[in-house]
Length: 243
Image (cartoon, rainbow, N blue to C red; front, top):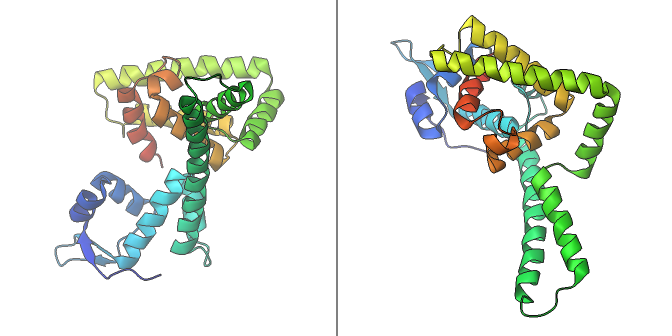
C-alpha cells in the first residue's frame, strides 16, 4: 500500500486531522510517533510514513488498544498499515451487521403494523435491541460475568464506591480549573485508568465496547448520572497525558 508523499508541520497536521498539537507532541515525547524531519527553525515535519503510522495509531485507539499496546504492536516488523486497516474493517463490519439485523427486524414489524405481528418476530427484535443497547458481544458478556464472579460482590461494591469518590474528586478539580497535566489530576487519571483496566481485564475489545456505549448512549446515561460530557472530556485530556 502506497501513500502520496507529503510533509506537514505539526500545526498543519493537527488542523487537517483534528488531533490536537498537544497530543501530537505527547506522542513524540513517549516515542509513539516522532516526526521524521525538522525545519531549519526546528519545527517538526511529518512525512508520508509518519502519517501512515498516525493512521495506525488512531485506528488502534478506536479499537480500544492502550497507548502502550499500540506501541508494542507497531514495534512488530510484520505489523503493517494493511494489517491495522483489516482489524478496523473487521470491527466495523461486526457493528454494521448488528445494526442491519436490528433495522431489518424493525422494518418487518413496521410493514405489518396494520396486521397482527408474529410474536417470534417481536422476541427476536427485543433480543437484538438488548444486545445492541448493551454493546457487548456474547463472548464479552461471558468474560465480564466470569470477572465479576472471580472478584466477588464485596470487591465490586468497593470499586463502585471508589468510582463515585474518584469522579467527585475529578469534578472538584475541573471546577477549580486545574490543568489536566497537573500532578493532582494525573494521579486521579492514573487510578481512573487502573479501574477501567480492572473492569475490562485489559481486553481491548471490551474497552472499545465500553467506549462505544458511552459515545452512543451519552455519558449521563452510561454512567448512571455519575458523570457528564464536560467531565469526561476533561478526564479524557488527562488520560491522554498519562506517562
